[in-house]
Image (cartoon, rainbow, N blue to C red; front, side, top):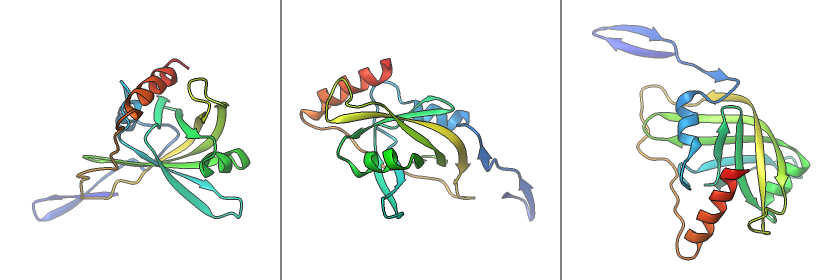
Length: 165
């Protein structure tokens, strides 16, 4: 519960904690039109020894409030981990005030990905969204990435294909 100061008096203000789907603000940010890579997301999977593993992904995007989609390199540990165990967590931090974690189940929907044989298209069915925004602070920046060199054209083509699926 967030506490707001009103003069010398403290009064509680309810904050949402958990939701079965992305709420409007997180959905709008993760919708990412036009090939945007940001905000980048951190994906957590379970390694074959049971240990948690994390990796950043700029391709994470919301398709609906209940569905996320991203691409993963076919030889990346993240893809191997989610094929073995589909449980997944995704965290997003975005200014000025969005910090959410998503718990869900991942599935590979296209491998190899038709536009680049080195990648796979993954979808995540959302089970729960948790509000992780700290009380009384804002976020100045999140994790930001950008394509460079020949990767720009590659990314733009890949993004257009992801949008059509």
